[in-house]
Amino acid sequence: MMKEEKEFNAAVVTALTVVAATAYLVCRKRNADKSTREIGFPIRYDHPNLPLPIRIIGKLPKAIRAPNLIKSSQPKPPKDAIDVLGKNDPSAPDPYDIVSIEEGKIWRVKYHFLADLEKAAGLEAITGKSFTDANTILANVPPEMKDIVAADLELQKRQLGMTQQERVEKKYLSSQNMLVARLDAKDEESGKEKLLVYNPCRMRPSIMEWLDGVGTVSYIVSGSSAHTNQLCQASEAFPKAKIVCAELAEMKCTAIGMRNADFVYTKKEDLKSLNAALANDGGAELHYVEGDTFTHAALVLVHGHLFECDLIYGRHCKTRMAGTSKEQFEDANRFSSASERLFWYTLIAGTASYTGCSPTYRVMGMDPRSPFCGVLLECPKDDSCSRMAGSLRKVIGLKFDAALMVHGGGDAPAGIPAEEFKKNIDANW
Image (cartoon, rainbow, N blue to C red):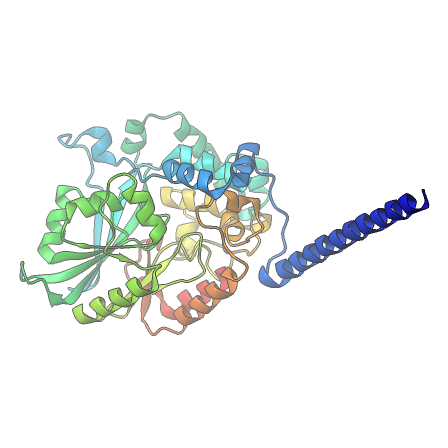
């Protein structure tokens, strides 16, 4: 009996020792995680209460989650006026505004299209920020702007009740910029100078004819893995052009039939080969922002100009969107300003943002421990912020005259002066 009791006591001691050791290791890991969070992620914030379906998706194994996320994020070109009114309708406006930035070398093509209103609802779900809650939004608006933003909210409500034709006729359209650079080298087959197209837009006959008049499209660059809606049709329009994109962009586009990219710039060897080819063709250079697992942003430096996408949101003064003048931002009659104001006061200004320059989702998308990362195809790691910071310091160190943005940029053709662009990068990140 004594022997059995001793063996029982020994077993209890062993079990308690295992439990204590396990508890110690768990506590130590939690403390290490907390320390890593404080050191690895520089911003302290409260996570928004994300919808249950998004939280559930985030808990699924990547093998199950990834295919569904790729399917749900398949590229889909938005409609423009020609889609809505018909190509033979004389009232259908040309969706392109072309501006020469540097004569014979760089152009900005502003492409106008109908915004996807359902996408805004999806953005609300994943950010926890409402684009229609007037009280919350107006709380972030300074007194002198409240009447203008209140009118923006009313305009937004009216749009929800309009047909696509009504929105086109009233010119309630969004826009993005396609940036075009003529390189020094000539295409052997056509004898024309090679063109680099950054952030391709819808390739209708009119814009293809214009491009053919200035050169031969040799490179099609998607500067963000979030900008893939037009990449597939652009690659079809120019089958001999080299496709340049991030691996995630390639995954989304090849899933619906696009040919494989020629250069996947998120792969070091491809980036090296691409820049060697660009140097040979006229001195352009692509700079990948390593560590940016949210958009995999890539900038192109060419002819003293820097092409940018999805890196800059707010201006360094933290009062408005970058690339938009004070007069433009406050213009109550400028439709694009209404959209910018709602974005600014919903996702960035006042208590809406954690940085005062970047939208909420951009911050959460860089935090490895954010539940938001569960809906991303590539989640950030503990060193993503430091790697991205290193990449952006290199960008700030580049020599160029001005930067051209895919989003916004106002109506001024000259772009953002280099020093202001660098201040904006610093303020946003």
